[in-house]
Length: 183
Image 1 (cartoon, helix red, strand yellow):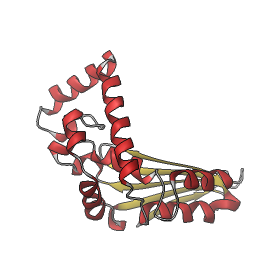
Image 2 (cartoon, one colour):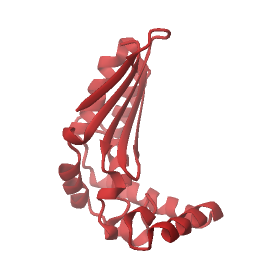
Image 3 (cartoon, one colour):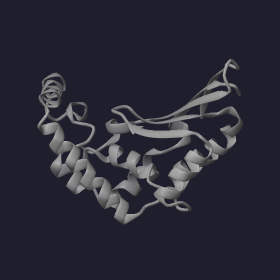
Image 4 (tube, one colour):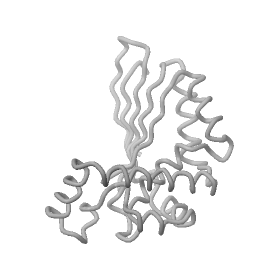
């Protein structure tokens, strides 16, 4: 893992960004949206914590942990008080290494994603952006596809697909960490 950092002691905060290379670029064209769903699943509890317990654990230490899928990576952004840095990073470790593969959460996340896709279909800006990407990259290029996927691709994704994608693509040798703060 490549780690880059800057010590800044003006305020007792630490910002961490963990970037796992790949993102949407590693998806199969017929299962676009997988990294988006994976990011949401990672945010939805761990093998030891329900989604509510994880959220409460993060709030208890006054931190924020956001996981986001992008075209070229999955990023985890952490903001915490310097005194709670170790606790926050232990939660991140648990999130990354012990995901909760809960079928109920998975189904809920897929439904939410389909709802977001429908909302985007009603947004002229989103429609224009999706059409522009298809014109630039070509219809069969993964870069032309919406990060959320489409109705058919999201419906085609199974929990087993997600677990396989996770095991194949989430790796320390694809990860870099940026740390800034009182550390």
